[in-house]
Amino acid sequence: MIRFVIVEDDVENNKQIKEIIDKEKYRTYLEVKTYCFYKYCEELQNIISNNDMRTVYILDIELENSKSGIEIASMIRENDWDSEIIFITNHDKMFETAHRSVYNVFDFIEKYHDLHKRLAEDIRLILSKQSDKKMFSYKGRNIDLHLYLQSIKYIYRDKEDRKVIIVTESSKYSVSLGVKEILDLLDSRFKMVHRSCIVNTNLVSSYDWNKSKVIMKDGSEVNFLSKKFKKELES
Image (tube, one colour):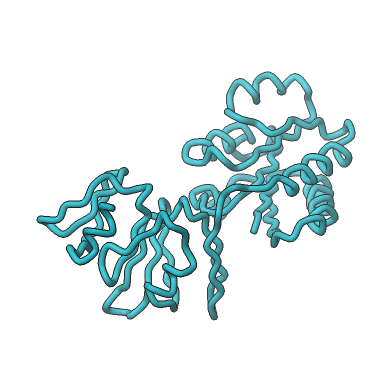
C-alpha cells in the first residue's frame, strides 16, 4: 500500500492533483489511498505521526490560515526520512528556500507551469520504484493493516483480552492471530524470545537473562524473555 497526502488550500488545484493521482495509480499493483487537506489539522498530524506506511506528500508551500508547506515538511522530517515530499507553489523564488529548509525534497513544481505533466511524471516514477522494504499485511473485521517490517519492534500476546499486540515505533495494533501464526508471516530478523513474544532482533540492544527482559536500542524494555530460547538467540 502507498498513501498520497495532498495539502493544498485552493479547492480546484486540490481536486486537480487528486485527479492526476487517480489516473496514474492504475499503473501499479499497490493499493493507493489518497487524503486531501486544505490546511494543517489534527488528522494530518496523526498521519505524519504514524510513519509505518509508505507516503507521498504533495504540499503547497503557501497555505492561508495554516502552517506553511515548509513547516509541515519539517515536521514530517523530524521522524520520517523515507517519505517523498513534492512542493508546489505559485512562485519559483521559493525553490531555494524550500530546498534549504527541508532535507531530501523529491521535486518542486510551479502551479502554472506544466503542473499536470510534471506531477504525473513524478507520480509515475514514484509508483515504479521497487521498494526494498518488506511489509506485514493483515486484514480483519475492523482493520486493514500494512506495516513495514523494519518498523515493528516486537509482538506479544495480551493475556487479558487474548489478542496479539504489534508494537511499532509509533503505535500499537491488535490482531486476531496467534504468535506463531504471525511469525510465519515475518522474515528471519524476527525471533521468539518467549512463547508469548517475538522481537525484531535488528532493534535489540541486549538480552537481560537475569531479569528476563529484552532491552531495545531505543531504551525501551520488553518484559518477555525465556531461557528456553537462549540458544537460538545467541547462535
